[in-house]
Image (cartoon, rainbow, N blue to C red; front, side):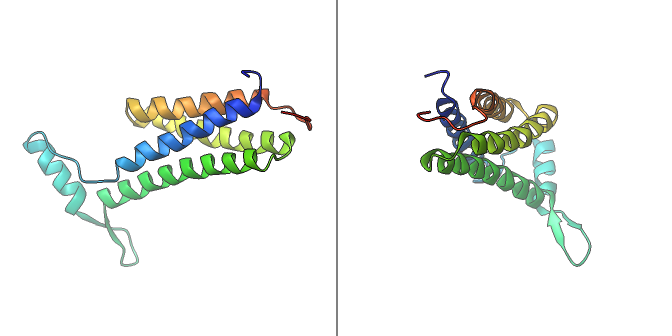
Length: 147
């Protein structure tokens, strides 16, 4: 079982969907301030609008939510793509290529999170990268009869 690439791809896609789901929870509600300094910072992030040119005025909170939404959608896209590949029994060579693309994208995202975020997204994205890597390296390049 542990040598079958389909097992590792299922584990990777579960972590992709869980990571996206947990990250989607961060989109609900606004942060709560613990002191006056945090209250002022949160107020500025939510209410102060930057002039981004062309009549576009967005707050840092708007930009933060947009990026958070994009990460949630990236995880959802990766997980649903892997479900599709496994359910349609796509050729392992094609799966290896698509998992390789996902591995590069999620590894870059992991590196960014490692530098600029906090522990839960670092751990969850790191697990996605680990399981995508295992799935990639256990996937054969050619067709296999009963994988």
